[in-house]
Image (cartoon, rainbow, N blue to C red; front, top):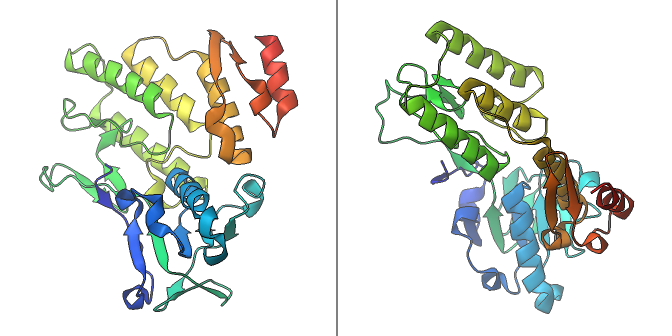
Length: 293
């Protein structure tokens, strides 16, 4: 599911004479030495790549600006990004050396990095087995099981979730299903539940392409509970959601240093921060967590 890059079709991009790559191709930040770089997209890859490029470019900062162009509210990120990163809205037009923003303003850039995700692609399956419409993989139950062929199981269709714990739960459920130990509802019920899940996302003003998107809401851990219920095993302990919430907050508010913070699970409902002094943006909250532990 991370094989076929998605690059938006932006008017004028064929005229651009600078370097243009997708985040999948990004390897060496030093390749952007001395350049003015526009990073389109501000999810995990966009954040990380912007930080890498800006960090290296400090040596030639007079010649370089990194524009993290995204749709999220700048207030969410202003305290977080390094000063070398200027936030702008997504650009809507390109020329041979400029990117143009919705208000008509523009910036001259030497390179563009598209951090715009991937397309679902299953070229090894016949079209009558799987259907993909606007990033919505259809005939899939619980974002895992093919409704017509329940032993055809997809791990990691879901996007933007707590990856390794959720992989773990999916793997447990898959093993039980292949062993014939999971009681699935009827095909009609599975179709109805899958459609209801899709419609609920649309009602939250998500685009159809977010059919398997788990970011920005409390869906992640409710989904984990659904997998556990279907498989008849205990769900993940609440402490993981607690830590995830704190880590997500810290990533938004303290992006340059969020990976320096360590946590230790002390029970199903408790944990400690091992270096609370590293938490700059919400230290009082971290200290309270530490005491509770």
